Image (cartoon, rainbow, N blue to C red):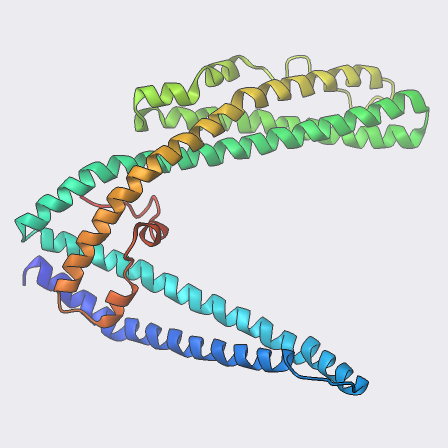
Length: 327
C-alpha cells in the first residue's frame, strides 16, 4: 500500500467513526441550544397585563427558571464550540497529511506546495518570534509598572513615617517598603530572563530586523544596575525613612528609564507582526486553497470536508508553534 492510500485509509476510518460521533454530538447540542433559546424567549415575552401578581410571577420565573436556562445554554454553547474546534484542528491536520501524501505522488501538487511553503515557512517563523517578543516584553513592562507603583506607595508611607511620628505609620511603612524590595527583586530577575530570551532569537531573525527591534535597548539594559544604590534600603530600622525615601526615589527613576528603553521594543515587534501578517495570510490562503483542492478530489466522509478550514483566518486559529506548516 502506498503512502497516500495508507493515509487515506487511516483518515477515513477516524472520520467514519469518531468523527461522525462528534458530529452527531454537535448536532444534538445545537438542537438543545435552539430549544433553550425558544424557552428563554417564551419566558421573557410573557405578558403580565395590568395584573401585579402576574407581573411578580413572571419576574420570578425570569430570575429563576429563565436564569437557569440561560446558564445551561451558555454551558451547551461552550461544549459545542469546543467540539467544533477539536474537529476543525483534526480536519486541518488530516488535510495536511493528505496534501503531503498526494505531493509525494503528484509532481504538479508537489511543485505548487513547495512554492507556497518556501515563502510561508520563514513568515511563520518570523510571526512566532514577533508574537513571543511582544508577549515577553509586555510581561516585563507589567512587572516594571507594578514595581514602580509599589515603590511610589512605599515612598508615600516613608514620608508619613518621617513626618508623622506615629508607630502605626512606622509599621505600615515597614511593610510597604518590604513589598517594594520584593517587587524590585522581581524586576531584576525578570530583566535577566528577558535578556536571555532576546539572546535566543538572534539566529531566528534577519540581522536588519534584529537590529531595528533591539536598537540600543538590550545593550543599555546590560549596563543598567537596578540595585545600584538601592541594596541599602532598610526595612528594619525605624530611623531611616529619609534614607529609604532617597533610595525609593532613585528606584522609581531607574524603573522609568528602563520602561522608556523597553517600550519601543514592544511597539516595533507589533509593527513587524502587522507587516508580516499580511504576507502570511496571503500565503496561508494559497495553502488552504491547494489543500481543499486535494481533499475535495479524494473519497472522504462529508464530515472532514465540512470541518476543514477554508480561509486563512480560520486556518491560522488551528496553528501553533508546535504544529507548523510542513514542506
